Length: 471
Image 1 (tube, helix red, strand yellow):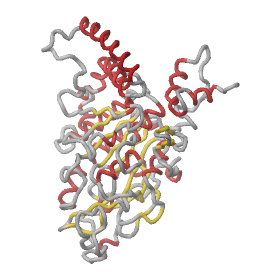
Image 2 (cartoon, rainbow, N blue to C red):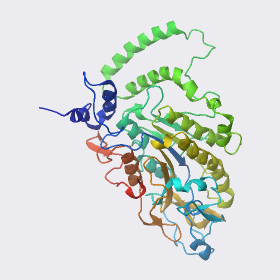
Image 3 (tube, rainbow, N blue to C red):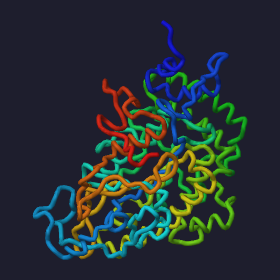
Image 4 (tube, rainbow, N blue to C red):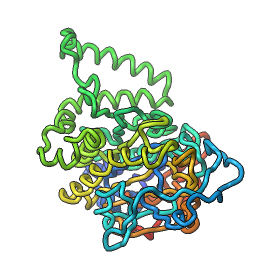
């Protein structure tokens, strides 16, 4: 049977499992010939994006206090117009309608309304495209965080970063393909679940790097206290380990964890050369460090991680996820207690670094093939909780994107006059994921993995590309 070269690559390793092989064979050549297909790194169509930085606001950033201006809340402030009974997932009975305590202004040629908590990001709205009617199927942090990352409410499914790693492979052999930079205060809801590989081969899970400690990557080099950890010992140890691995692989041929562990060791060996330079923030100019807010205690942690994200994508990491806030009731975007007291500090911790990241990506020409995403797991209620807090709300929230393939200043969807429910252009995680994959040159309906007899997708059986925000 005569197979085309593209068909052969498609079937290497079984279906989409061979997508990463496409890049490998294209680089190395297959036999004496090279793959002559110009898809700009894409698989099903030409890609506009090669790398992604995702900024995730843990806890549910309030849309009507940040990007979704609702003047009707001012008119109805104090009136009891909410549900009579507590909806599922709410932590308390709905209170009265509450206006935003922050002033809103219009910015840019697009006229985007932005509240006073984001004065720096507001300067760049003409470079962003907004999904104004994002929605979740839950009002609970854990399932909502899973949903925005994996497309499912339950654990066990691969995250978007893992799917991208599986589908496209790496851009460099010296650094991890999917890197996670968690908040210094702790991991998000579900701990490492939101960056899991799920049922995909384990080597596609996110590599967690903590940039706030003295040692960015633990155990990359042997401790000086252990003199026996030398090259001779390494050689003998590796030979013994090889024999054990061969025996284990023969006994458990379907367990991908061994392959993942071997790959992690190989990557660690390569990172001994590349990582020290990549993670050395001090190599940046004093002006750049100040631009990201590293001289300010409020912005230092998030700013350091945004700068690290830029350094990583610049050096070939394909997907970097930067988290703002840990799980829990404080120190994140879960502002039950008081919107006017709790939202401004966490907003201030990210605003300057995000604006600096946008300028830096643009100045270095990285926006030509880099996508920047800002999102959260759900929104908050237009009704007060307690005194002046807001409860969970999966009905409507905001996501913005900027960079390669994004229509500057665009907007899609709309919530109701209170910001309670999405009413026009409702966009679920499936549509968001489909759009991101599309920019990477992947048809979300064709990125599949057979698991327990089911052809699984990141977008499940849903999703459409939001072309309204794309160039």
